[in-house]
Length: 226
Image 1 (tube, helix red, strand yellow):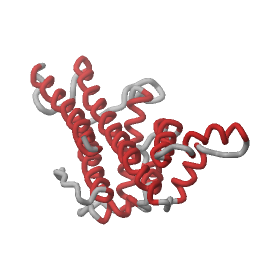
Image 2 (tube, one colour):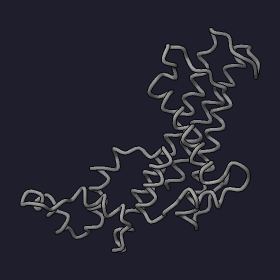
Image 3 (cartoon, helix red, strand yellow):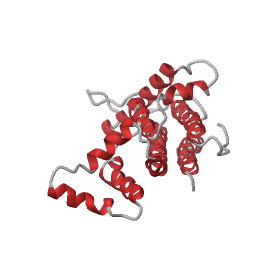
């Protein structure tokens, strides 16, 4: 499967959680809309979970694109500065010990693949590609500078400038982190209010963002627009 296909499967999982929320409202006789009573607020953890999955789907997609594209970029022999810097950090040759560590790559029949694999296992797998500046840096490594400007050019309508897209994504990532790392609670312990429709907005935004990121890197891949 392609990175985009995997992404769509993850987004479908997020959307299934919001559908589950709606179905459980109906099964509890709560109607389709309206504020939940305290004993039914447990249902709101479904849209919260959907938000976490949506942002994680974006993160996984960017990782997959890097893993697929970096070997090809290395093979061209013309490395973007950011990729060259990342590669130098995982294969420094300063003394006999670091030379021995680098020797398997130097003597490999396919050194580009070995370099890409080491970069992945030593560095990339431990990084998060959710915040706008992190995504920007990821795409610079594969030769796409100012990727949010490129996305903006493909995104019609209001609130679609480069700054708008970065701001919206940053806000969604902040809420994702509040849910994942803080239990979505304020400093005093109270649970933050959330509208279930917010999860749909996050999933839709991420879907549209990845659609356009995919068009930039894989212009010949046919995808279904959200």
